[in-house]
Length: 95
Image (cartoon, rainbow, N blue to C red):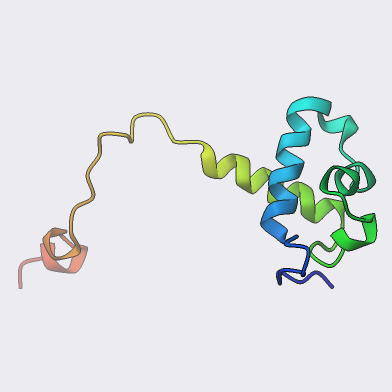
């Protein structure tokens, strides 16, 4: 079972995901393996499984990290309206 805790070496789930992202920039998808990732981090491949269930979970987390960096077009200038000023459907119906 994967655990998000940090080991004494400083390895944690976020560090693994960030290293995988960096690897993808240089070796592309086909070059990303758990063993190569472990080598890049200076640990044994089995250490990665303390933080991740399997490679599929790693790829899911990498995809989430990439999507978190994407900003939808056209939303940059939109300012959030405080809740107390929003019109709710129930408020819009005259009583």
